[in-house]
Image (cartoon, rainbow, N blue to C red; front, side, top):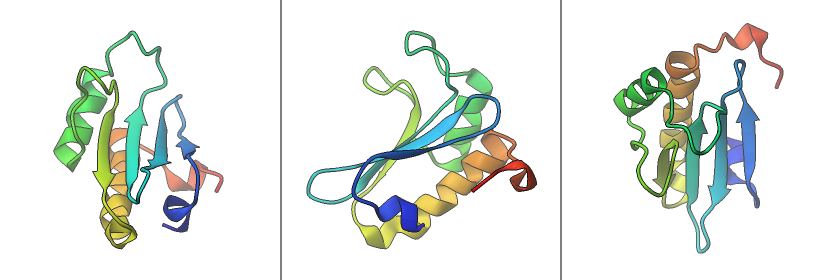
Length: 101
């Protein structure tokens, strides 16, 4: 959760080429995206998209290729962590024993 409240953009690479990235919004808040690591001109993998949307992420659209969500202030970090954990475990099938933090 502390990483989500930093000053600049950051990301977490996940096994298989996917990633979760977060970008501070001017004036407060955070924009978070989950992607499969494929080229921007390719649609997000349908299985990943469906899983992330079921977890509560926003669906890709004409402006954002990846699934996404935004939090308005640091008090919502717990919600962000829950969405990210759902993405990691259900969407990306991450085994935390295999991840280096």
